[in-house]
Length: 155
Length: 212
Image (tube, rainbow over all chains, first blue to last red; front, side):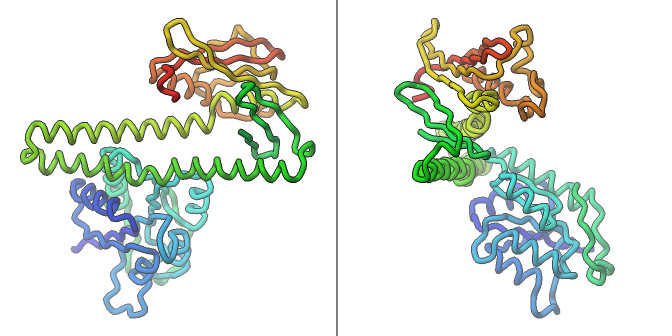
């Protein structure tokens, strides 16, 4: 059984490196695919050619992104049957009420503010990984694409 | 300095006199309202910038100095490890300061005075500072608003305790508790005096160099 990848959508190269480090230290073996802007994320998630499409187990999504912003990525992911049920954790610097409300309204499963202190950041990444990759039962892949988008549950 | 709350209640702060004058929006001319709105926007932009834009580079400082210690600790030698450790500590201290600053700007004492005088057409809020006995600076905010029962003053700074009904004055009860925690973290003291219907005065002490 191969582990499905995790898609990280992050434009800040420092945050990318730190997250990859925290993820590796957490002992997770899933490959982390990195998209550095919203357009790259959509090209990966909703490709025109579906031949080698891999459904990620989890999407870690920053909100402020070049080209297509995080909320728009989330809207399009939720609107497409192939990706509608993939868990999306918003991982961002902002804890503005407006952003949190918009994130959940667009269908995010969780909203996590990136802590500044690295040990707290690493703990957060570890907790997200443990919850979404181990504790939470994944949606069976054979069923999910054919089904209409259900209301996603929050942890 | 000028400020405005969400309901459009505005204030002009005369820093020289150290007094805050409350105005109703309808009393203000169009140009002044525009000025106030612009000043308010500038404040919000500044707070947003502090909250978000400063955090990302700080996370990098904290993260990579920690990484340096973990991965290259041996190569750095004792002196090098000491330097890297200082970067870790300083970045974490700055992260804490930013959080405190934001918490203070969100619910400080001035906002309380603003809230508890909201039922009055004419309100006076005074703030100032004078030297305390221990060489620190004693800052105060005094209003002539709803006040409180001095017998209940020990409950004021406990988290989630409120002396007023939510329908009368909205709030969560964490504001003064946060002020006390922050001031105590800086080694200062907080205190309050007041009487029902006769306003309230809150003061705290802080090292003078910490606010310059």
